[in-house]
Length: 115
Image (cartoon, rainbow, N blue to C red; front, side, top):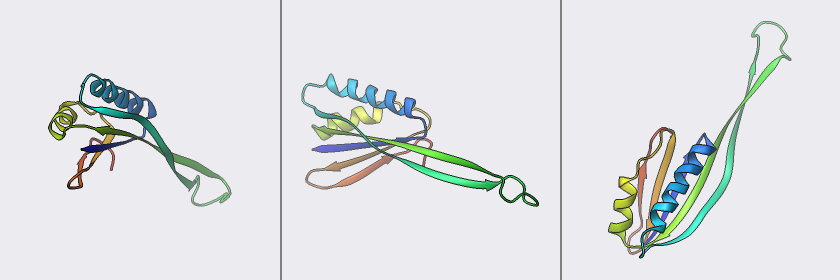
């Protein structure tokens, strides 16, 4: 069965260390094949706010929120892979989505901080 593990976070360092941890866990298992970590495009939301609501309308501040995403593709036995995934501790602020494809396609989503 094929697993696609997609993770999102606002902090790229935490996301990278979490995905490397998953990679090390699944490399120890002999019957599991891993395709490696693929970095998905960063989504950037930009906001512009007036500094003063009354005067000087040209004075503005700009803010942005960056959402980093990575995906890991794993092929292996459902019970072995899924039990390992549920036992791993997800860091605060990382959203993990698990999509399986095989005989029946299902989505398993585990969130920890991001919607």
